[in-house]
Image (cartoon, rainbow, N blue to C red; front, side, top):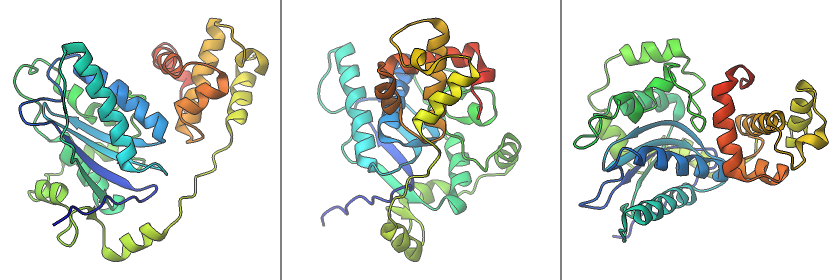
Length: 290
């Protein structure tokens, strides 16, 4: 029987599981986590996606991802191909690091998102050579508690720190593993009702209007007492670099544009902007708030 095609629902939230090929691991060195997350951040920016939760194990990567108009497959292909090439270049390997068939289950966020996040955050940590890695490093648990800030993670809006704390105190459902990894009985690709799925598949994608990038540039320039022309210039002055990092962060947070979009607008390199956002969010966290 042929495999069923992937479901593309614009603005849909998917539970994604990436598997390594037999005899291989997605994460086999401590530095692999940072490398994987760097390519994940790039895929999030280029595909206008949002990651709501994650959990890393040695041979699987679990993600809760909300897409926009780019299909899940494009997001996954970008992430896995870039990461695999990097790993092979570092270690001299070849071939497929990931299984070609990943799991992508479309979920009803009202019914399952909080429950799914709790499930991921209770998955057992990776075993073996990487036992020395701090367990909180392997999931988005600490970010939901407010202990860490991950630039590419978008926490579920309904899960405030208090709500999340209460959620994690509730015992997990013993059927969670079967539910989330197998999907609905009538269609393993989804955890939504048949009627809701029909509505979702028929609904056109309408981007949310949250202003324009020009408005963000003008807003940041005004707040920082800078001329717009200076922010758009080639100057590498520290205050201008901070302004550009703020423009990038606010544009992404408001879903106005991706990191790549901001880079084109400001005539900068995307990786330079990403490093700038990370650096200045640590140095000036009070500036990076909605």
